Length: 327
Length: 296
Image (cartoon, rainbow over all chains, first blue to last red; front, top):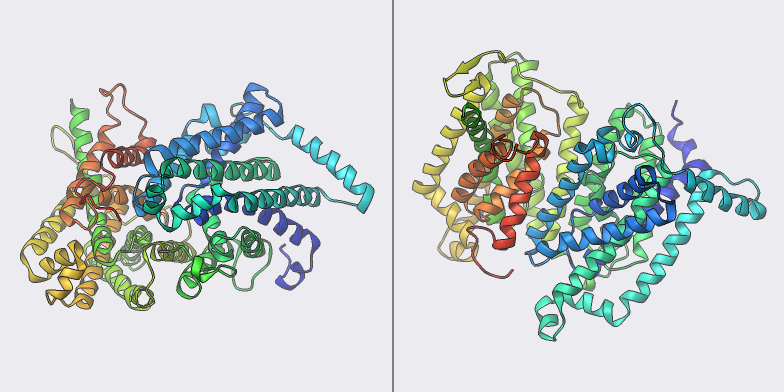
């Protein structure tokens, strides 16, 4: 029995879940902000970095027996390597070709995750990492870390739930990452990225190695996507290839465009609005629609928001019109 | 050897459907500068319009195909008037239009999901009728698909080559500024482009639904990336290029599973072959196979 629309918006658990989802997607979309918002790269395969990191970590923990922190670092490194690998043949392409080539890359990664069951657990997901029949789990070490944080939080705030602990951890990371990105964007390095976005030929005429800068932006964005993938894996304790379909990339695009292209602090705003739509249509009981229809309704709503934004406010809620990079 | 012929036949079926889907996409891309991500959903829409006539109303498959083409063409034209033309008048650029089309794709696909659900659907046709042509076997659906697709490709080819409208479309796609100063009525040609492109997408959707034997609302999206691959391989805006590249891609996708080629790849990776080929070719020719070497 799902609660009615009115009661859900006063529930603490609902807003905690919205916060967790919004936090994960903020980190994910920050990666796209670096690639698209600052460098102008149309990456439509961003979900691949999330997938590569989540799978790398789960496989290293379950199959190789590595400790969690080492696996997580290796996973981020792996995603960055994939960023460079994807970038090498594609960043020289025209913007529209780059978009299609990156979607194709993302789909290849998903097809591999779906079909190489020996490596990834196949369509049933990570639960089958040890083969069908034995339930595999990768997050024991994470849960004990989370419990340490929870105990520590409970000393100050009384009763704290598992999701609330996650909320605190994720948003701490979000704030740190945004501060780091703010610093990078206003550094000489960040200025070169934005000059590439505005006029690639001018920056290369000034002697900047545009190709190398684009690859660096892709790799940094991939690392952010990877961190989001790790949190996604920890929060849901289990994932499967269908979590990484192209739709997830589009969610990041909505968040970046909704908030405002080229503005770091706009990303969490976009992500929270997205989180409310995402979780609100999942848990609330909307009149006249059954559960399956609600999932479809959510995606129709998201589609309409995209169209509406492009038609009426292409710079997003907080974006500056003069810095709007949607050509 | 018989496996080779069978794969070639299957490749022709897949390839001709990709070609049919690619014509509309490439013309819209070339003429309107819309990278229409919702094109796959036009195929899905066509497949379900035919389902409505053939299964829900119990009509004949020929009526179903005709209805699907007409309704999908109507959808294409309607969206031109309520969405694309207003967007163009606001001066939306190629990236804005691309993102708009992603939103449109989500809306159309999930409206279809809402109406018909996600369960596999099939047309009311005889799936057991198989023609044994000696060197390969084709199902009735495959025979219909290949015959209809080749007839459509031939007709469209003649239309583009010989008629005034076809010439206007190609001229506009090649160079919009030049075409408009040459006195081509752009708005009129655009409407006909949507009728042709969306109508063919509807047809392609029905044919794919026939050869796949069962389909759900994700069908069009699954075909979209191979169709994009054909558009880019053929050179954006080139209808002939898209036709040739579509058939070529279909053949490569099927032949890649051939045992004689180092055991062949598993059939599930057929779409990945199309993507890999696309990326490989873009590496060599970043502007597309027949595209002009210009920086954009």
